[in-house]
Amino acid sequence: MVIFTKLKITTLPELPEVQTTVNGINKKLKGLRIVDIWTDYPARHYDNPQWQNSEKISSRQIKNKHFFNYFKKNIVGKKITGAERRAKNVLIHLSANKTPSKTTKGRCETILIHMKMTGHLLFGKYEKVNTKTKNLKPKTTKWVAQEPGPLRDDSFNQFIHLVFSLSNGKHLVLSDMRKFAKVLLIENFGLNTSSELSHLGPEPLTSNFSLKVLKERLNKKPNWPIKSALMDQTLISGIGNIYSDEILWASNIHPLRKVEDLKTSQFIKILVNTKLILKKGIDFKGDSMSDYRNIDGRRGRFQNEHQAYRRTGKPCTKKRCPGTIKRTGVRGRNAHFCSTHQK
Image 1 (tube, helix red, strand yellow):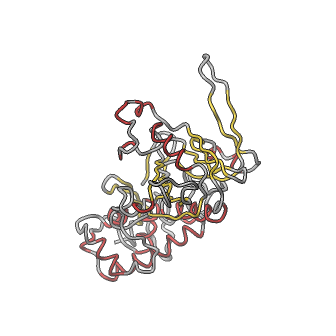
Image 2: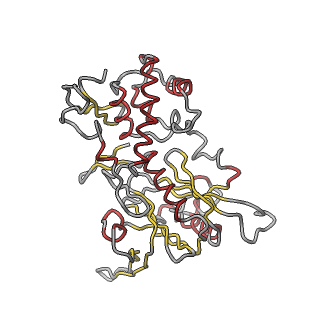
Image 3: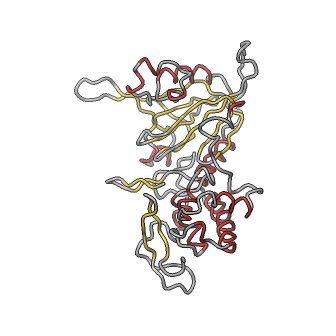
């Protein structure tokens, strides 16, 4: 998905960006214990008493300060046992309760983080700094990376709104300029049936994501443009604006082509290129044309590999193709495509 603002174009992290984050967590954070949590996410909207019941589904996010208290109480002291990706969600699995009660005996929980438009997770050593403000307003808290490099020096990494203090003295933080990220806590026994995950389509990089599965999923929306169908998270998980453009460019298929008009040979091209391009996105550590950074605060490199996305007016790079990249609207989104070889 792409959001246009006055300043820039913001893209949501897609499958490769989220997988890159998960890979970083598994490499550097497994076995570390969460010793404290800080946030400035809570919003006044949730001050109303109707949100004070932490069991209300609509209030089970850390922007509700009442739920944040519950969240913190249940997480502090637990170890990070690993992370995985589901669609565009980061799932951080935690150890069972250290001193379980009768009701929580053996209960394991998972932190679900959807980074939304401008969010990305970072790992390093941070220090909390209280800064003075004008007009006698209360001091504000700012977290600053202590080591030189992109964590400290890249402006996109400086919007810290959630901090997990860890047992090795370092921190897992969420930089989120627009504060749209979603952070929830889900018990593992209900993970697959949760409202956040149960509606999602199959994962395109799994071995059982076959031609048959692809055709069955896409044909649920026969009258939709193929680009829209590829981006529908209930049909296939993890694909957004960037990678759908690149997949269709490589497959020689126009983004407005209806699903019902596709031939089997075209479905085969979509399947092959979906797997190739998403894997390439992971190999290049994601796309950082917008806000996304990996947990070390570094930019990915896939933005240097674009053949269609945001190349409006430029010559097509496909061999012997005289076409030009154009942009058109598709069900409220933008599609970039070659006007010659994509049919």
